[in-house]
Image (cartoon, rainbow, N blue to C red; front, side):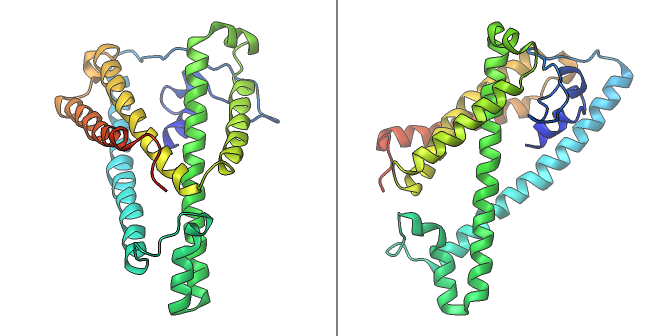
Length: 246
């Protein structure tokens, strides 16, 4: 989300490739279908190093440790109050923790936990929704000249059409099976995406980027380990069956 926001605001090379404006009232902007690489000059490398410093702070400090706390603390809280024998698989699973805490410590704390849980789920799914829609838009925009000519370089119709279809499909999917199964299924499918994307990023960064800004050996190794890590979970998922057990 931060990367997309920076691109839409014109930071870095975002001012060259364009962005997707708002559907109503937004100015018409042409979205490039190919990437752009800056010239290797002392001034550009200075800007690159400064941008890279900001990215490191964001990824290592905010995202990495924030993600760890965001995953570990709710998991500890849930396992401390909810036993495996009482876990629900229906719609009640979202409010189960709040209900148990409310029985022990009162309604104010229960409402607090419920609102925090709702916000975490909403924000997570919002990020996933936006990222998925943008990725599909980028793929179609980059690969199809017919789509680009259809809108004369304006990607708004494509982006917001895919967004609307995804939302409608999500509402339909909620009626098809239990929410916990949808979460498990989407998590496992995301693992497969990470396997492919990590290897593709490795290929692009080591072949298309200038040698001066290509990733170091340890970063390349980290991408390979990422593919192996998520690939192991995908393999276990496929061995255990495509659909998770309720």
